[in-house]
Image (cartoon, rainbow, N blue to C red; front, top):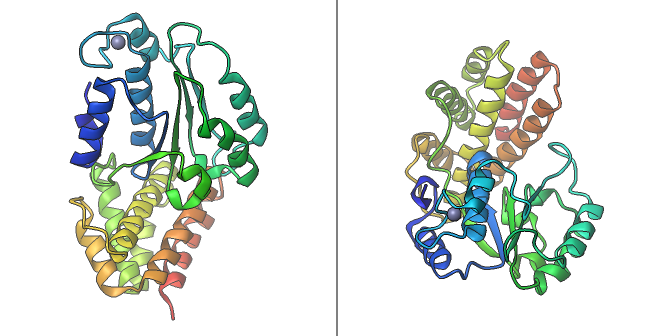
Length: 290
Ligand SMILES: [Zn+2]
């Protein structure tokens, strides 16, 4: 295992490697963007690196702590997330974490709290955490993950070291990428017929719709980033991103991204499949209309 497997910029990777090596990782990290599964995997990797008791490269993968990490049974690594997709991150949970952080670790000398989807925290939840993030007890680490730092309170952000994940390494199948790119290009060109044709290929395939929505969300986010002066990433969907950036204004790309986020939420909530597809066509079209 190494950080090479994760979609990080060279600078961020070297930063994390050096800090793991010297056991000086920041006590509050915010992993931002990229694919959700990669963020999750990186959070677990970093947590393992923190609790690993090996002497060489960490996580060593073989010490007692690493073995427990692999089995997801390390008592000093705690993972929290909103109860379900789209729900808020409860303030009670944040308060409980704040109290728990002062208790001694069970096994070693470090404790790690992984807080996933922290963009789902409302202001009171974030404020409940703020105090402990300001002065975390020695050996206590917080790894927050979020879609975008823009959803976090500035006070929380100022306490965290943000590590952005690149969207470039995607876990999407070729079929998913193809459909999502075609839909993005069709949306860019306002091509209603192409939108209908591409979305028709998704009938009866709920999981595929979900994947396509996630991929579309990455594409629109990459286009937004580029439109805001960010550098283009080498991604399989670079061409679709290029078309969006070339054809649409920033507010329109943002509208597309927002619409896809909303649809992803309904896809998670078992919405009727046909309605979901109709919604997809409507929202892709609507976002680009004048
Ligand atoms: Zn180890």
